[in-house]
Image 1 (tube, protein in one colour):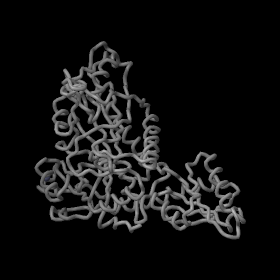
Image 2 (image 1 turned 90 degrees about the horizontal axis):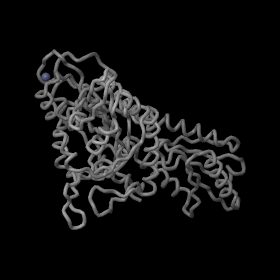
Image 3 (image 1 turned 180 degrees about the horizontal axis):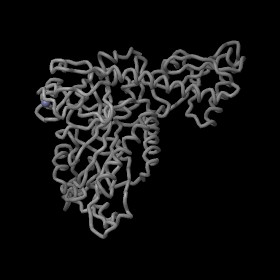
Image 4 (image 1 turned 120 degrees about the horizontal axis):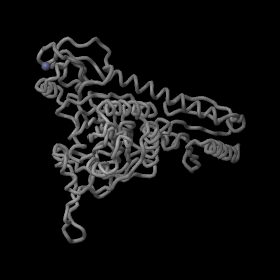
Length: 475
Ligand code: ZN
């Protein structure tokens, strides 16, 4: 097998090679941007979803599922929203050979599917908050070059939609979503930025949008999700009203929280290395692979012991794979490293005789584990692997940012730049021009480079209202 391209200098080539070689997706389907999830890729996706479900349900959200087709009449009710999606939607216009009375939109996102129904569900303040989510596929007619998990036309999508009594409750829901995402990101060992997008770059119909961005090195960033505050921008047109305690009729305040399969792309992009994919334990299709190392003198003892090891770990609830195939052990090591399995256990004649196994993490840490209490030892080794992976990712995250004090520093920058910005749109566009990318926005909480507040705007030199902002090149 050919060596992978260099991740640092040929990022996209490296990424595509890892997805391909690790067999995570089959891109040969007959429609561009619609990938086939393979058994191995699907396992990763299901694990990813289960972390999302666990964390969002811990905040009181309930699963629902709405139809994929939305009547044009409902879709058109929120003007800004439909303009934002105009060029991206797929239309269903015929049933058999007859034109439909009302054309249908294949959901690009589900506000306009859900909100007419929310207007029926929400009656009184006792119905609030309404916090529901769904994990479904959405469709967007992407015209740029598609890439597996990063830019696709059929998107595996998590979306939470909520109705709240007032603006303060909606703002609190935004904070709760950001905290839930922080817990998900911890499980994925994925350092991230929460950035309030500038007004010209917010979600269509939102009051404000907080994007979740991952730096990918080389000044590039990847938006993997977002949290939006809608105020009454949708509840007005859709008539989502409730009777307040004082008997008055009020519009609800709404929020949404969206994450996509880009999260899987980010995990591959951030953790992968020259040997291939690296999965954190929570996402790994298999947490452990067990490989017997045959020897002519030991008969089938290594195979039998490996089988025993795999069975014990599976009974302990671990996702384990026994690779008993005919390939040489070295070829198997290479294969499972490429596929990103966190922990490999080798069982040879020496180990079998001594009642031990040799454990090697995907980051190369080797140790000998006793068969007595093996389950606990393996769990501890996996936890150690996750910690090491998080440390490596955090070190890379920190090195992905630097301050900039002049527009010149933004040109051809190999890092995401943190700079002073006055908040004016004209200065924002000058920054975007210089960086040949985007003004990502203003970080929520602490900026990635710890520094006292900036004195002046990098463009106009004004001192009033200046705050830290980030500029980079979104993928
Ligand atoms: Zn300015």
